[in-house]
Image 1 (tube, rainbow, N blue to C red):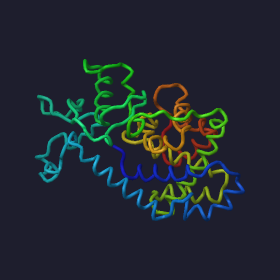
Image 2: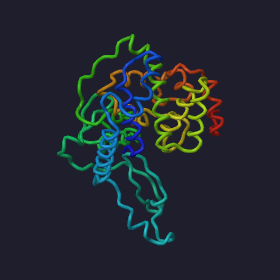
Image 3: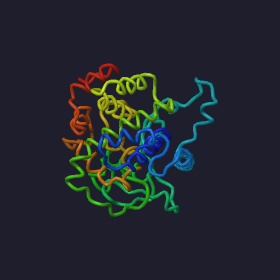
Length: 300
């Protein structure tokens, strides 16, 4: 499930995408106006979108297949189940072995959903009843169980919420210009989050450096977003599944986002390294590596 911060960032990206390609001179002239209003979206509009996103997430998080651990938290530490300390990824639930040890296993069943808002479109352009069904299927295929319907589904993930639809094709010229647009969008989003005081102190310093040093304008924003997407576990690579927060909210408005992100995974191993991220955004890897060294990332 996408956390609220990811939804907020996705919402900001969506709003920035409403700015179509324009010259640097035009952007500078409109930058002040952009802070307060983006193509018809006032600050009140943005707040309403974020509130609605929070409400939707709360509803989605109430899905019956999630485990309630509130009672476990109230117990003394020595009485808590080993599962309390065991983190299981999407599509998995913690169970105790006969020896009393915690292990993550695939969810056995998903609730039957009747609400169309629960339906999701997968990266194989198939509509599923819920994200639970996709996560469960991916788990079964990763574990190679008899419930796996297609070995390729080991890389199954949610592309976007809602039934699958025919999306416009990204032209060659649009794709060629997309890295520039993506770099600029990431910088603007990072800058906006800093002004909202929603960045960590380190990333806040990075965006302030980027505002006064043009050579860091794009590289600092690229490093921030890559690190932000590298969720639990922090394995120094971004999976296709971890790209969800920037892919799903944008597909209806920006038809180049999916092919662009697919292109970033140059070796098609379903993981995007920092080097691949830099190549995709046309930023020299050496610059990104230097910034990540400051974050104490061991890239070797």
